[in-house]
Amino acid sequence: NHAPLFAKTRGDVAVSFEFFPPKTDAMAETLWRSIETLAPLKPRFVSVTYGAGGSTRERTHATVSRIVRETELTPAAHLTCVGASRDEIDEVARSYWQAGVRHIVALRGDPPEPGTPYAPHPDGYATAADLVAGLKKVADFDISVAAYPETHPEADCPDSDLENLIRKIDAGADRAITQFFFSADNFFRFRDKLAARRPDVELVPGILPVTNVATARRFAGQCGAAIPDWMDGVFEGLDELPAARQLVAATIAGELCGQLYAGGVRHFHFYTLNRAELAFAICHLLGVRG
Ligand code: FAD
Image (cartoon, rainbow, N blue to C red; front, side):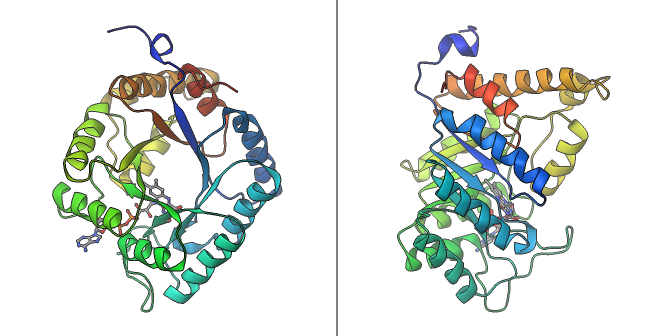
């Protein structure tokens, strides 16, 4: 039916939030304010990314450790294969386990220089599936992996990308979190193909509320996500109007979440970019309250 999202939800939505490790004190303050705003929504987990090329290993660890020390939240630490040997990565994983971190988001990662081809470390894990298998030997982690409803840009074809996701699941992943997307139909098609092969695995949509199409297009170009043509039109003329852009961003993401909810999705993962407002507002529309 055509009732708006907030008339349909039944208090049955779970959420999770993704953050990146802050570089400066001012960025750290923004992050912690955002975490304080979002914590009452009781996310299933909050994840902390690992910079391209493994560049934020210490900062990711420090952010995750602070979440463990200072909040009741369940942290998920991202870990990639880039620029480190298997022994080094296993050591990072062990130190997470010892610190009480039980959830890892296991990724291959991208080369430190954007646009250059990916080359595995000579003694490293070559792919995310290898990493998942390695992590499972270190400890019985809860593991999330990446999925691409619109196909990873390096994949030969959608089917081979799906086979790769299935390898990650068979290696021990518990759920897949998707790259951001703006077509609910593309998500559902991908979900159905995955469900036909691995019916029990959770596929969690990654939601990116977009406030700036040019920035989103840049991200999307690197990760194989499609930006629909209508989005340029919707943001046209709003360059100097940040408040209007926030409203438009919440409306677009809220509508996508409504379509996903109507199609049975009950867990939403938000790419927050360390800002709470949009994710908080969309959660509110989804009936998620503190
Ligand atoms: P993989 O699953 O290993 O796949 C990489 C590519 O290789 C795919 O095209 C796959 O189809 C292909 N492939 C793999 N194995 C085979 C095989 N045996 N035969 C043929 N083809 C194969 N990046 C970061 O640097 N830090 C982060 O914190 C981070 N967080 C992310 C979180 C989410 C939810 C998502 C969706 C992405 C994230 N990324 C992050 C980006 C990710 O690292 C890149 O998209 C990367 O290019 C691929 O990582 P992957 O884990 O999907 O790799």
